[in-house]
Amino acid sequence: LDTTTEGRYTLRARMVEILRAADMQDNVDIIFCTDPDILLGSTESSLVYIMALELEKQLPNIHVSTVNVEREPEAVEKYKRTSASEITASHVIVTSGTEFRTFQMQSFFTVSSDSGEIVGYNGEQRMCEAILSLTARDLPLACFTIGNGETGYLYDLIRVSGFEVVGIDLETEDIPEECALLIINGPTSDFSSGRLSDVDYNSPLTKIDRFLDGYGTVFY
Image (cartoon, rainbow, N blue to C red; front, side, top):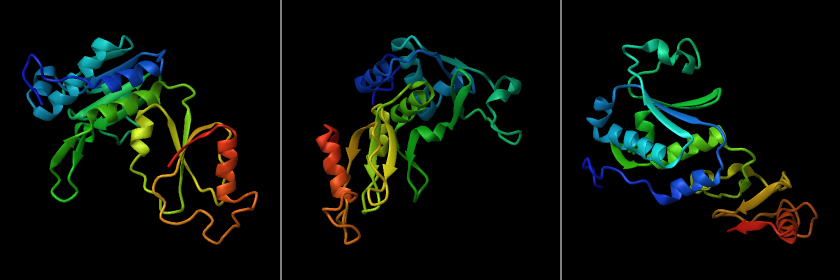
């Protein structure tokens, strides 16, 4: 990763494409809770800060600012969920209209559960999810099947690609009419599994067949 002043950070084109495709109509403010020189003085915070600045350059609805919460704690009072909430210099606030999300700087990184050390950077995905959750209107619906040993590691990828994501158990639930994408992600047991007949109108396999007959898309 090039962290020089001239080329410290380059956004992945896919992130910008996703946000442009979302057709954001509202402004999004990304607020860092300390001064720029402090942000740029740390490898971790500089990655997140410069990512936000690059987004601001490429997307007219996004605006980046900083506030020193130690000198001006009142500036972030409205972003506290409760009177006991605390916003520190390590927080990042993403807000649009009356909605907001607050993140610790560490939230933009993958941290080892064993050592507690940072082992990866997922800042673009986390920021994209935050912006989409605040601004998206009528996102297409992606349904993950659950209850048959499926894995959930694609949830974040699908969500950051611009979908609303829900889990459904086809043994007990129907596929929603508004579902655009049905994802069957590595089940370890058969859908019928002896509970319902495969030819039963309400069996999971029949529900999938009906979904396909209606030109739904299944990812398996």
